[in-house]
Image 1: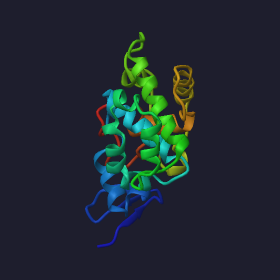
Image 2: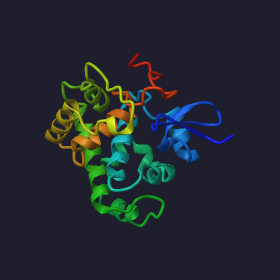
Image 3: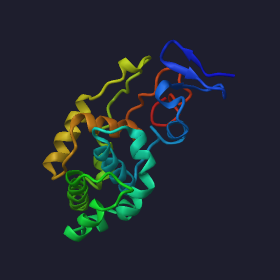
Length: 204
C-alpha cells in the first residue's frame, strides 16, 4: 500500500500514522520525527549538542546533519561542554580535517565559544544552559495545520537569542533558537492531526 496524503499537509504512511511530508519518506528523518523531534531535552549536554547542531545546520539540510551526528559526537567529545571549552588551535585543525563532520571554521569556533559560555553560565543565577533555555517556554504553543502555518520565530525565540548573545553565545539568531525550541520540546509545532502532536508531555 502506498502512502496517502491528507489535507495536503500530512501523509499517512503504510503503518497508518500521519506525518508531515518532510518526515514521510526518508527512513532517517522518519525515525527522527517519530522518536526524537519535539521530545523534551532538559539536560545541559543534550541542549548544548542540539544548540551546536542547529548552528552547523545553517544553510544545510537537517538530513545532512543527522547523517553526520555520530561523527559530530565523536569529534566534539560527546558534546561535553567542559571538554569542548578547552579546545584550541590543534583541535580546530583536527576538526577541519575531519571529513565526517561539516568542516566550517566559523561554526567550529562558534561551538567552542558556546561551550565556554555554557560552562560560564553555570555560575550565574540563571542555572545551567538547559534551565536557561527552558525559562523561555511560552504560555501557549502554536497549533499549525499546514507547514505554511508553522512559525519560524517567536517573541520568546527573539528574547532567547538576545539573552544568549548577551551571555557570550554566538550563532544563536531568533530563527535558529526557534528551531532549537521545536527540537527540544519547548514548543510543539507538530501539525494538528500528526500522530506526534501532543505526545511530548509538555503540551496537552
